Amino acid sequence: MAERHEDGDWVTTTPWYVSFFGEAYFDIYGTLLSDERTTGEVEGIVKLLALPPGSHILDLACGHGRHAIPLAELGYRVTGQDLSEIFLDRARADAQARGVKVNWVHSDMREIPFVDEFDAIINIFTAFGYLESDAEDQRVLHQVQKALRPGGRFLLELMHRDALLRWFQPFGVSRREDGLMVVEDRRFDQRTGRNAVRATLIYPDGRRAELGHDARIYTLTELAGMLARSVLDIQATYGGLDGSPLTLDSRRLVVIAQKPARAHDLSVMPIRMD
Image (cartoon, one colour):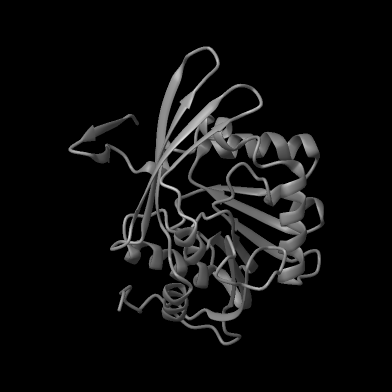
């Protein structure tokens, strides 16, 4: 849905995460998400989770299957869940072309239609923090806990807020190899912790397109509290999927949390933010 500009604020008539993940997404990120990068990320996921082939993994907010399909090729039973039908259509076609089976689920991440099912759930490439409030993000973690089997692990990989603020650039311009120019206007709200980006795409033929995203970037301290409220115990933190130590300069944050071996019923627990 198109954006309009009012009194310096960005206003959208539908949630950004509904309209953002379309064909223009691939124009922006397609050249950045190389096969080499994906291979390295999948290798990191496998190493950090340390699960044997045959384990059941949910890729939550799986997008076009960039990680789900290679994991299936490695012998894991994979379910991919996403809200974008455009992305899921690409994922289905790619999985079929590569001869692997993945269970694709079209659903909002606040509704994971499984109970005690997965050995692991992964959420990669800052796909957490999309929703309108901290309480809604907490609801996602409740759903993750519900869907994991007792003892199952949750791997969360996202932008590291400490490094984002240390290196924050309010404006950026890049030119792709095909001639596309991407101009980004970035705003970080220190009160709400939300990082808003509006991207203007200028194509070689003169066409222009605009789209934006607005994500809550949590500190590790905030994430630790949220995971605890959803009865998920942090086991390890890293500065990337390569398993590097987490430092103030780490651009990425990886958190691995575990559902206790003895299951907890969250259906009666209120979703609140202390």
